[in-house]
Length: 260
Image (cartoon, rainbow, N blue to C red; front, side, top):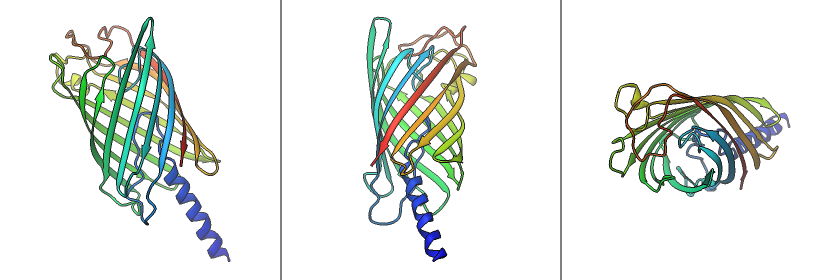
Protein backbone atom coordinates (compact mmCIF):
# COMPACT_ATOMS: atom_id res chain seq x y z
CA UNK A 1 0.00 0.00 0.00
CA UNK A 2 2.78 2.42 0.93
CA UNK A 3 4.64 1.57 -2.27
CA UNK A 4 1.53 2.25 -4.38
CA UNK A 5 0.88 5.55 -2.59
CA UNK A 6 4.48 6.67 -3.07
CA UNK A 7 4.27 5.80 -6.77
CA UNK A 8 1.07 7.82 -7.21
CA UNK A 9 2.57 10.82 -5.41
CA UNK A 10 5.68 10.59 -7.60
CA UNK A 11 3.61 10.49 -10.79
CA UNK A 12 1.58 13.50 -9.64
CA UNK A 13 4.71 15.51 -8.91
CA UNK A 14 6.18 14.56 -12.28
CA UNK A 15 3.02 15.64 -14.09
CA UNK A 16 3.00 18.94 -12.22
CA UNK A 17 6.63 19.57 -13.11
CA UNK A 18 5.90 18.89 -16.77
CA UNK A 19 2.99 21.35 -16.68
CA UNK A 20 5.10 24.27 -15.49
CA UNK A 21 6.09 25.53 -18.91
CA UNK A 22 7.42 29.01 -17.92
CA UNK A 23 9.04 29.12 -14.47
CA UNK A 24 11.03 32.18 -15.60
CA UNK A 25 10.06 35.43 -17.32
CA UNK A 26 13.05 35.81 -19.66
CA UNK A 27 14.65 32.36 -19.74
CA UNK A 28 13.16 29.55 -21.85
CA UNK A 29 13.05 26.29 -19.89
CA UNK A 30 12.24 23.07 -21.73
CA UNK A 31 10.78 19.91 -20.17
CA UNK A 32 12.79 17.37 -22.14
CA UNK A 33 11.77 14.53 -24.42
CA UNK A 34 8.75 13.31 -22.45
CA UNK A 35 8.20 9.52 -22.54
CA UNK A 36 4.91 7.92 -23.52
CA UNK A 37 2.46 8.54 -26.36
CA UNK A 38 0.78 11.61 -24.82
CA UNK A 39 3.52 14.23 -25.07
CA UNK A 40 1.38 17.27 -25.87
CA UNK A 41 1.26 20.05 -23.33
CA UNK A 42 0.55 23.71 -24.03
CA UNK A 43 0.70 26.91 -22.02
CA UNK A 44 -0.80 30.28 -22.93
CA UNK A 45 0.23 33.39 -21.05
CA UNK A 46 -0.32 37.11 -20.78
CA UNK A 47 2.55 39.42 -19.83
CA UNK A 48 2.27 42.97 -18.63
CA UNK A 49 5.26 45.14 -17.84
CA UNK A 50 6.75 48.59 -17.60
CA UNK A 51 10.28 49.82 -18.10
CA UNK A 52 12.46 52.88 -18.40
CA UNK A 53 15.39 52.63 -20.78
CA UNK A 54 15.24 48.85 -21.31
CA UNK A 55 15.76 47.09 -24.64
CA UNK A 56 14.18 44.02 -26.18
CA UNK A 57 14.13 41.28 -24.91
CA UNK A 58 14.55 42.83 -21.45
CA UNK A 59 11.53 45.05 -21.93
CA UNK A 60 9.93 48.00 -23.69
CA UNK A 61 10.59 51.67 -22.95
CA UNK A 62 7.11 52.32 -21.57
CA UNK A 63 4.17 49.97 -21.00
CA UNK A 64 4.12 46.56 -22.66
CA UNK A 65 1.44 43.91 -23.17
CA UNK A 66 2.31 40.48 -24.51
CA UNK A 67 0.22 37.43 -25.43
CA UNK A 68 2.16 34.22 -26.02
CA UNK A 69 2.25 30.45 -25.97
CA UNK A 70 4.69 27.61 -25.32
CA UNK A 71 3.99 23.98 -26.05
CA UNK A 72 5.07 20.61 -27.34
CA UNK A 73 3.39 19.88 -30.70
CA UNK A 74 5.28 16.58 -30.84
CA UNK A 75 7.63 14.53 -28.73
CA UNK A 76 10.98 16.31 -28.30
CA UNK A 77 9.85 19.61 -29.87
CA UNK A 78 9.03 22.91 -28.15
CA UNK A 79 7.22 25.70 -30.00
CA UNK A 80 7.13 29.20 -28.51
CA UNK A 81 5.78 32.48 -29.82
CA UNK A 82 4.19 35.78 -28.84
CA UNK A 83 2.65 39.01 -30.05
CA UNK A 84 3.47 42.20 -28.12
CA UNK A 85 2.21 45.78 -28.08
CA UNK A 86 4.25 48.59 -26.53
CA UNK A 87 3.09 52.12 -25.71
CA UNK A 88 5.22 55.07 -24.68
CA UNK A 89 4.17 58.70 -25.01
CA UNK A 90 2.08 58.99 -28.18
CA UNK A 91 3.72 55.99 -29.86
CA UNK A 92 2.23 52.51 -30.23
CA UNK A 93 4.40 49.72 -31.65
CA UNK A 94 4.13 45.96 -32.03
CA UNK A 95 6.45 42.98 -32.38
CA UNK A 96 5.99 39.28 -33.09
CA UNK A 97 8.25 36.26 -32.78
CA UNK A 98 8.23 32.46 -33.00
CA UNK A 99 10.82 29.76 -32.30
CA UNK A 100 11.01 25.98 -32.65
CA UNK A 101 13.40 24.02 -30.40
CA UNK A 102 14.32 20.35 -30.38
CA UNK A 103 15.37 18.48 -27.24
CA UNK A 104 18.70 16.69 -27.33
CA UNK A 105 18.42 14.99 -23.91
CA UNK A 106 15.54 12.79 -22.73
CA UNK A 107 13.37 13.71 -19.75
CA UNK A 108 14.63 10.72 -17.73
CA UNK A 109 17.79 12.75 -17.20
CA UNK A 110 17.82 15.82 -14.95
CA UNK A 111 19.87 17.55 -17.63
CA UNK A 112 17.96 19.56 -20.23
CA UNK A 113 19.43 20.63 -23.56
CA UNK A 114 17.55 22.06 -26.54
CA UNK A 115 18.53 23.99 -29.66
CA UNK A 116 16.38 25.80 -32.17
CA UNK A 117 15.81 28.62 -34.63
CA UNK A 118 13.17 31.29 -35.13
CA UNK A 119 12.31 34.74 -36.40
CA UNK A 120 11.16 38.04 -34.94
CA UNK A 121 9.73 41.29 -36.22
CA UNK A 122 11.14 44.03 -34.00
CA UNK A 123 9.36 47.09 -32.65
CA UNK A 124 10.75 49.23 -35.48
CA UNK A 125 9.75 46.69 -38.16
CA UNK A 126 13.14 45.03 -38.72
CA UNK A 127 13.09 41.30 -39.52
CA UNK A 128 15.53 39.28 -37.39
CA UNK A 129 16.63 35.63 -37.52
CA UNK A 130 17.07 33.87 -34.17
CA UNK A 131 19.07 30.89 -32.91
CA UNK A 132 18.84 29.63 -29.32
CA UNK A 133 20.53 27.09 -27.07
CA UNK A 134 18.71 26.25 -23.83
CA UNK A 135 20.70 24.32 -21.21
CA UNK A 136 19.40 23.47 -17.76
CA UNK A 137 19.24 21.13 -14.80
CA UNK A 138 15.93 20.15 -13.23
CA UNK A 139 16.28 18.68 -9.73
CA UNK A 140 13.73 17.70 -7.13
CA UNK A 141 13.65 21.23 -5.67
CA UNK A 142 16.12 23.36 -7.63
CA UNK A 143 15.85 24.48 -11.24
CA UNK A 144 18.72 26.13 -13.14
CA UNK A 145 18.50 27.19 -16.80
CA UNK A 146 20.62 29.27 -19.12
CA UNK A 147 19.96 30.47 -22.66
CA UNK A 148 22.31 31.67 -25.37
CA UNK A 149 20.50 33.51 -28.15
CA UNK A 150 22.02 34.83 -31.36
CA UNK A 151 20.15 37.45 -33.37
CA UNK A 152 20.85 38.38 -36.99
CA UNK A 153 19.01 41.63 -37.93
CA UNK A 154 18.40 42.26 -41.62
CA UNK A 155 19.01 46.00 -41.45
CA UNK A 156 21.92 48.05 -42.76
CA UNK A 157 24.10 49.59 -40.04
CA UNK A 158 23.23 47.01 -37.38
CA UNK A 159 25.64 44.60 -35.73
CA UNK A 160 26.22 41.44 -37.83
CA UNK A 161 25.11 39.31 -34.85
CA UNK A 162 23.76 40.30 -31.42
CA UNK A 163 24.59 38.04 -28.47
CA UNK A 164 22.03 37.69 -25.65
CA UNK A 165 22.30 35.42 -22.63
CA UNK A 166 19.86 34.68 -19.82
CA UNK A 167 20.33 32.73 -16.62
CA UNK A 168 17.69 31.69 -14.10
CA UNK A 169 17.87 29.83 -10.79
CA UNK A 170 14.72 28.86 -8.90
CA UNK A 171 14.22 26.97 -5.64
CA UNK A 172 10.99 25.25 -4.64
CA UNK A 173 9.69 26.33 -1.23
CA UNK A 174 6.50 24.24 -1.22
CA UNK A 175 2.79 24.85 -1.94
CA UNK A 176 3.59 25.72 -5.57
CA UNK A 177 5.95 28.58 -4.68
CA UNK A 178 9.40 29.07 -6.18
CA UNK A 179 11.88 31.89 -5.56
CA UNK A 180 15.19 32.62 -7.20
CA UNK A 181 17.18 35.02 -9.37
CA UNK A 182 17.11 35.76 -13.08
CA UNK A 183 19.59 37.73 -15.16
CA UNK A 184 19.90 38.93 -18.76
CA UNK A 185 22.98 40.05 -20.69
CA UNK A 186 22.31 41.87 -23.94
CA UNK A 187 24.59 42.99 -26.79
CA UNK A 188 27.47 41.33 -24.95
CA UNK A 189 29.70 41.88 -27.97
CA UNK A 190 30.04 45.40 -26.53
CA UNK A 191 32.60 44.00 -24.07
CA UNK A 192 35.05 43.25 -26.89
CA UNK A 193 33.83 45.59 -29.67
CA UNK A 194 34.44 49.25 -28.87
CA UNK A 195 32.19 50.34 -31.76
CA UNK A 196 29.25 48.03 -30.97
CA UNK A 197 26.33 49.42 -32.99
CA UNK A 198 23.55 49.27 -30.40
CA UNK A 199 25.02 51.47 -27.66
CA UNK A 200 26.97 48.88 -25.66
CA UNK A 201 26.37 45.91 -23.37
CA UNK A 202 23.43 45.88 -20.92
CA UNK A 203 22.96 43.72 -17.83
CA UNK A 204 19.80 42.98 -15.86
CA UNK A 205 19.49 41.06 -12.58
CA UNK A 206 16.30 40.67 -10.56
CA UNK A 207 14.31 38.27 -8.40
CA UNK A 208 12.51 35.32 -10.03
CA UNK A 209 9.15 34.55 -8.40
CA UNK A 210 6.89 31.72 -9.53
CA UNK A 211 3.62 30.34 -8.15
CA UNK A 212 1.49 27.52 -9.53
CA UNK A 213 -1.84 26.08 -8.46
CA UNK A 214 -1.93 22.58 -6.86
CA UNK A 215 -2.75 20.98 -10.22
CA UNK A 216 -0.04 23.00 -11.97
CA UNK A 217 -2.51 24.53 -14.43
CA UNK A 218 -2.63 28.18 -13.37
CA UNK A 219 0.65 29.97 -12.68
CA UNK A 220 2.20 33.38 -12.11
CA UNK A 221 5.79 34.46 -12.76
CA UNK A 222 7.32 37.85 -11.96
CA UNK A 223 10.67 39.59 -12.17
CA UNK A 224 11.91 43.15 -11.94
CA UNK A 225 15.01 45.17 -11.20
CA UNK A 226 17.69 47.55 -12.49
CA UNK A 227 19.29 47.58 -15.93
CA UNK A 228 22.97 48.52 -15.94
CA UNK A 229 24.69 49.86 -19.05
CA UNK A 230 28.03 48.11 -18.59
CA UNK A 231 29.82 49.49 -21.68
CA UNK A 232 29.32 52.58 -23.82
CA UNK A 233 29.44 53.00 -27.56
CA UNK A 234 29.04 56.18 -29.58
CA UNK A 235 27.63 54.42 -32.63
CA UNK A 236 23.95 54.68 -33.52
CA UNK A 237 21.66 52.48 -35.58
CA UNK A 238 17.97 51.80 -36.18
CA UNK A 239 17.92 49.16 -33.44
CA UNK A 240 15.20 49.65 -30.80
CA UNK A 241 17.79 50.53 -28.14
CA UNK A 242 18.20 53.58 -25.86
CA UNK A 243 21.55 54.70 -27.24
CA UNK A 244 22.38 57.32 -24.60
CA UNK A 245 24.04 55.04 -22.07
CA UNK A 246 24.73 57.76 -19.50
CA UNK A 247 21.71 56.70 -17.41
CA UNK A 248 20.75 53.21 -16.27
CA UNK A 249 17.17 51.92 -16.34
CA UNK A 250 14.80 49.41 -14.81
CA UNK A 251 12.07 46.99 -15.81
CA UNK A 252 9.38 44.88 -14.19
CA UNK A 253 7.14 42.19 -15.65
CA UNK A 254 4.30 39.94 -14.50
CA UNK A 255 3.29 36.81 -16.42
CA UNK A 256 -0.05 35.03 -15.92
CA UNK A 257 -0.51 31.68 -17.62
CA UNK A 258 -2.56 28.53 -17.93
CA UNK A 259 -1.34 25.07 -18.96
CA UNK A 260 -3.59 22.53 -20.68
